[in-house]
Image (spheres, rainbow, N blue to C red):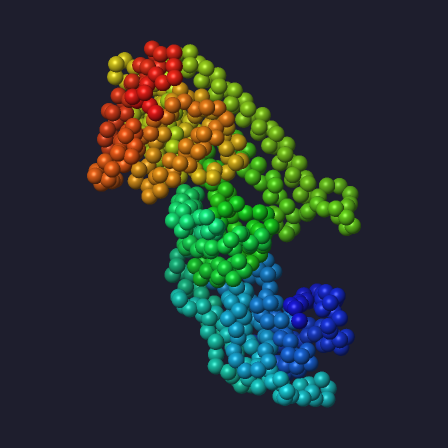
Length: 582
């Protein structure tokens, strides 16, 4: 028989038509009467209650019954099925937190000997139950007494509960006589366990404001293990750049993502246990999630779930300092949010068609949608004005006949450090992703009385969210309008070749053709010189520098001077600077 459950407030057990046909009227009534029973607050179970559940289980042809009680001894939920099948969703649990239990215990039945299954123990951990009592029901023994009592149906029981010990989740007792278990003090057990969990949480010294994240990856067909690890390592850097702490990374190989939860149900349960074990308060996926996937995962895990795009948007929101940057970030965030409104929590009203969905006025969802659409429209107008303003600035620079060279490259390649080293610009520099959002232009004096205008731009990233690309179009035009590009590469990065490919791909996708590009390998001070020479053989036209130490910056200045001289004396024929740029 499939899972069924009922809440205390329901007048019916809430069964489907097929399930209702499977139960006789008196069986339904017996299950409903369980809500009227009340156990002593300081007792895990009573002999009478256990025997009654055993009799019901036998009458239901060995179908397990799971009953959930609060600490006042009231029955709050009755389910036909195992604890795993009837577990309470995370959002319905009355309390959460690594220092406390949920305040609910489960008494379940199973026919025959043997303790709780692994799935039942997993359900106990996910719900942080005070205890799980498994009643071992005899399939043939037992008898009903006059007046509704029962005896002989349950011979022994097992007590399981969580334990505040590192590397160990739970403890399961040996089979106990029912009378012995009925004498155990619930309040004493709960107090001892919660004191232990409190000491454990204090030892961890968890900052409640700190985002403690678990990363989740999905390896699909055609993706190598190395590519997956590179993607997850980059996701970890993104989380750290956003101010979070990465606790652990897990991944699963699948032919295609699960439509409901991305990863499989077993992996979701493993992730939920890991969230509890590590005290995580955030789960980050390496791919974009649908609103329903976010909702399903949060309901199971009990913590906030975000995807890679949301982390990147959060970083941009933190980094934006100028009015222009804040405008573009807000536009990107609202464009990301708009199609996801329908998945933002259970209390949000939703629109639909058919009976029961029509009524006077607008729903909360539609009200928010209209407000966001109006804001997006206004922001687009302001961003367009920003684009025109920057276009006027570029036209003014063009009138000076000084060439403009844009620094482009993967995020954290060292573009801002290079700008500072060449022009003493004092642009903000940090060893983090997307430290720079707003373009900065500085004049660089070069040998031979030449000069160029160097522009530092926002860093690129593999699979940059399309909302950001659209919102930052005004900023990216600094790249497409430049006379030439310095493509800065972090040669010390393990995946430097993949980063070159990602940037070149993004540049080729620009709406306007970019100028000539010069490859500049940065951070060579961190590398073995012999290995650098091997790379030089692969890229004979590239420059190799260290912005941090100043190594070989004279070669870069000389190359820029060649370009500036060619720019000033040439009508920009097919290739006025073949020796310098490629």
